[in-house]
Length: 157
Image (cartoon, rainbow, N blue to C red):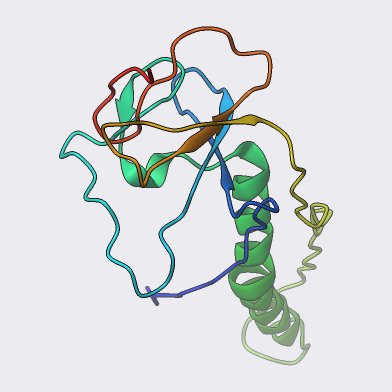
């Protein structure tokens, strides 16, 4: 099996925050990515904390549904579709008559619709933490309960 490395860009809001989604409570929030060239704050061994429900999860588990849909579409376009085209060509090559084995096969491929281009709106309110001042988050405007630090889970003052 071959290995493929793909990349995609994810838009930031005007303040540079990246939209994320808790894998447990499924609420969206935003965090501030570490600028290129800077060392990120190390994530706890058990993972980052959700600002809403304070449940920890692996740093790679926070993609939104739209981000996963976009990544899936890129993977289909760059990996799956070329492999299916090659498979179709191989099967159609077997459809020749006069050989020892005669196979009549037809391959049709239904391509999924492309997801909309990702956009980022400037919603949510910023929350800063005294425990990890370089790790602010943005939470839903109407959220009126505790907001937890991504790194240590402490409640914002």
